[in-house]
Image (cartoon, rainbow over all chains, first blue to last red):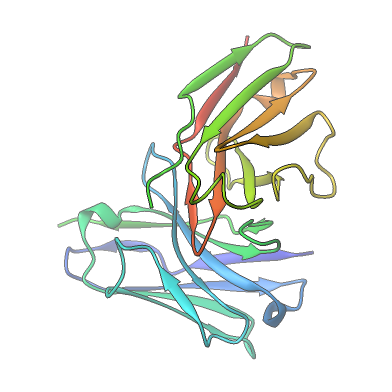
Length: 118
Length: 108
């Protein structure tokens, strides 16, 4: 079964750090671009970051640039999102998603909740 | 990039057809054939319904169709069913991905 499973979410204080992981299974992970998308409570989807097949190219939304770092370990079939200098407005469910088609996400994880609060 | 513009809500009766619009600019929706549509039920992850304007992934009902004219893309759902009630998001891909604000579909 093709699957993405996120982990690492939780409660963190403003200014703190958190590392999200996304374990992939059921497909050849190294053949796909991967993305992080977030959704604040009661709000819409927002693209956060993407990484190419081998990690040599990354891109970020302006709102997280300089604070978040996307990476991947193809040997472990795992995607990561290192989040530093967290703010209250980063509170959201974070989804990892597979870029199965140009600009389209065909497989999504179940999401992991990140809450930034004192 | 600014978010794409979708109506906040649409509604229809079972069996009817509805259309959800998604308006962008010539720099996103109008400039590329990389418009996608997602369905999201409460508390669930989004599901890809349409990619590259009008293509359906395997397993998606042919009641769902997509199109584009100029800077506006559209998702049409025909033969509305109760299980279609959900939030729907469009997205467009240029150098990065931008989503619409989402449309809540109510099946009356």
